Length: 336
Image 1 (cartoon, rainbow, N blue to C red):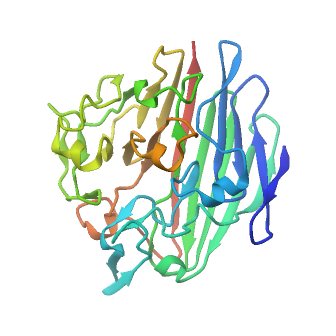
Image 2 (image 1 turned 60 degrees about the horizontal axis):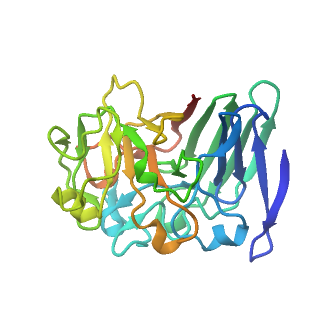
């Protein structure tokens, strides 16, 4: 189903597209920012919203917390808003102090995407596209990005793709705030989380990875067994102090059964997520500063490693001219 969702301040129209059946998973995506606005699922006979959302388009226009956005060209941070590519120093938009975050001042999450395809039948799907011109936010190359969302009765499959006519960093992911409880104003940190990862990336001030890959063993970053995700204290570990809680990337094991597993406090609904090779987990500690009435949520983003263009020891993050970038994310739901 397609419907008008409003008009941007510059006069362009935005649509909301709803996918999914009445008795299963339903998804709503906007043509503005390819924003994943709603993700809902029946729990004990009642449809439950699982991510935070705004009611009006102007709230998304003014949002700086990336509520539901598709983030890119490069999701997460680039230190000093600069990197070197093919021997040339590149400067991208600094929009978080001296650093670059989630693609810059506008990134992909505040652009109008084109509807390339919509299909129904047994696997409702939509494909959205955006052409990012050479020089946008300082990045080289013209990039044609697409996102395909396919909805099944209990799963959402997301395929993020891109091609460029010049080498450029690419790291695309989604940024919804999850709260699986029936009341989004209940603390999302009461949820239970499992991350099947033996290592994570420590950070310095500005939440830039040090380049070290550290063990989770014996630290508050060990989520190999499901537990309440709230840190016992931000003073419990220097890394928690730096971030004011969790805002780090976990290094997923190659044989991991998933990227993470998030459950409501009473375990009446569980979300299993796939993707990678990294998983950024942010426990939403600063969301109330920008949106005190929105509710409480946590971020779980399968993605490449932050600051990868400046860290040769991290998995490569540069898309070469003519090659295809492709990243998959899946959300799978199970209710009691």
